[in-house]
Image (cartoon, rainbow, N blue to C red; front, side, top):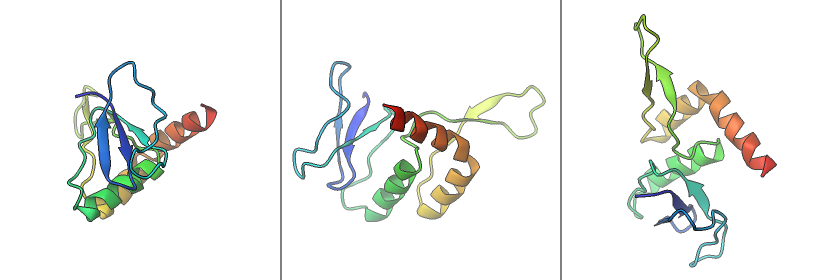
Length: 112
């Protein structure tokens, strides 16, 4: 599976191939779709709670790219991939913990 164009309004996702354009509009509602990492696994269309969490994360600059965090109590400085949250409460903690990463991505988006 590749990167995805996701309509957060219609709750649908389309897999992309390398040659497709990132800036796409939803074929159902006509709104601009969100470009998401291949790590994103869309929730069921009926799962409004999880879609709310996805919208919150995207609004704060998280498009499901890998985020590396240190492993606690590891003297070698090893890292692990952060697990994206499932609930809005967890998402708020996640955004606070990784705030600088989200801010960098939002700034990058503004420059495009």
